[in-house]
Amino acid sequence: MKQFRIAVIAGDGIGKEVIPIGKHVVDVACEHECEIEWVDLPWSSDFYREHGRMMPEDGLVQLRSFDSIYLGAVGDPPDVPDYITLWGLLLPIRKQFDLHVNVRPVRLMPGIQGPLRNRGPEDIDMLFVRENTEGEYAGAGGRVHQGTEHEVALQTSVFSRFNVERVVRYAFDIAQRRRKHLTSITKSNAMQYGMPFWDDVVNDVAREFPDVEVSHVLVDAAAAAMITKPQTFDVVVGSNLFADILTDLGGALMGSLGLPPSANIAADPTVPSLFEPVHGSAPDIAGQGIANPIGTVWAGAMMLDQLGESDSASRIVQAIEAVCADGSVLTGDLGGSATTVEVGEAIVSALRDQN
Ligand code: GGG
Image (tube, rainbow, N blue to C red; front, top):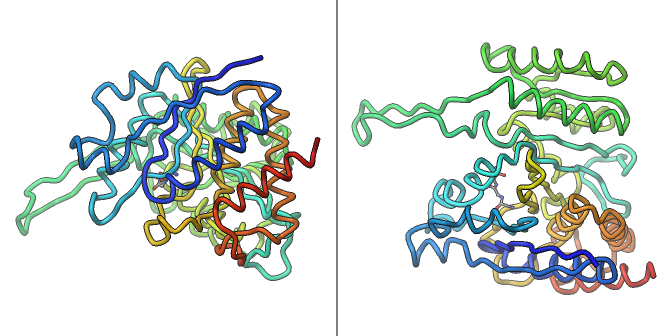
């Protein structure tokens, strides 16, 4: 039986409530296939309050030895500023481990009432590939004359050919195995250096994939088209910030931001990849036991898939589909009244029903 060691960072807010559900579902899904040693790491805003940092000094060294990282959510505003929580934990992991792409499915699940009139699961089935280590999140910039009326802040986007090329190639490769259409998100009309460069790289890589049709769409137009003609999107590739924003819109199209998962994939397969729900810590509902655990459970399925346990991964996604289609055990964000734990139990029982 295969054995995996997984680092668990439940983090803040609802992360602490949804992660135990995800772990349990993953354990049940692969109970005859693999054995998982979960190692819980208390790295969070509470850890920051106690130690003045989001993770220990050797945190990244500790993480390196795991097969995967399973993360809930980070953020505890206004007590701890969001830039502290993100730059103290999630972003250093993405950068240090070269988690070059962030794969985010946007699917309307059968049985879920999305916000768009007359649109069903056949209309909303996209896969976002988000550039994940540079772009607008490169961390290049600074503040000068701080605290004076002459204060200036610079936040510089960074696009390197090496990185954009491999991210775009990753997206083309997936598009080739799906409906053979790739939408590249741009803003080359207003951002006259980085974005025409991005478009050039997409066009260069496109020559390796002649069977994949490519559309270049301005980010603002893409946001509108995701609402007015979502069926035109198959695989979508975008910069770090653009794809982050559009995938929150994607979560809304799915009916709730509690549903979408994400996989931060390491370029080097010997380095752990990181799996997390798209949503954040949701302080407004934290501690009430009502958070939707589906995004986290689905992220667990993406983790199993990346670890080579694709049957168990598919079974989890099927169980999620069954719970959504049934519709009787859903959390409040999806119009139901079930608790986080009850949705987890429903997914486990759907898994058991497959046997
Ligand atoms: N699920 C992890 C989490 O808390 N995400 C919220 C967030 O703000 N993430 C930043 C990002 O993905 O760029």
